[in-house]
Image 1 (cartoon, rainbow, N blue to C red):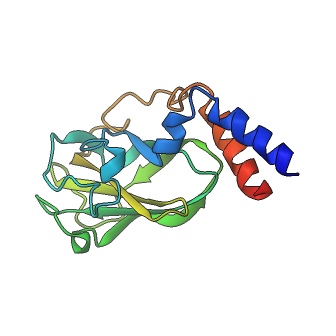
Image 2: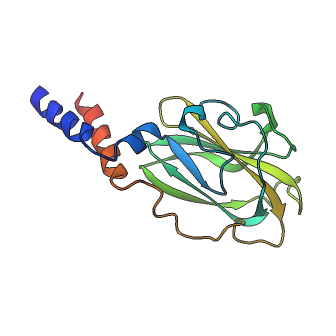
Image 3: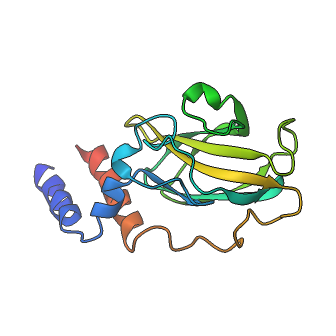
Length: 183
């Protein structure tokens, strides 16, 4: 059994694309995040960046949020702040999607309907927050948006997000999961 486990370790350690999923936990893709720095994701409320960035036009109804997840399963929390400059977790008091568990490793697209939130009006500035816990602590990413009643595609083209995982990353993550079960 130990010899088999060693072969799996060798095979996984030798995988060239292992660094990407091993370093990354999740990555907000669309709308664009404030920044993406894997080392800062642990810092609430917005992954170490508490300064509002350029705001992406985003529809009140019919928006899309896309992200890549690099853990076999994770708990997700989806919050929104309607303050001009949210700097504390308490600023993210409203939910834009119910808390959920996701899995497996892969790309995720969520439809966003903010029309049920009273603050969601045309021209209002907001910040979407994604919180992700894949078993190694809560991670945070934010995107700054300006709401629009005339958009229907999330401010960016509703394109497929098929290439978010680096080549071979899903296989490497699956091998790591299998290794955890063996050890």
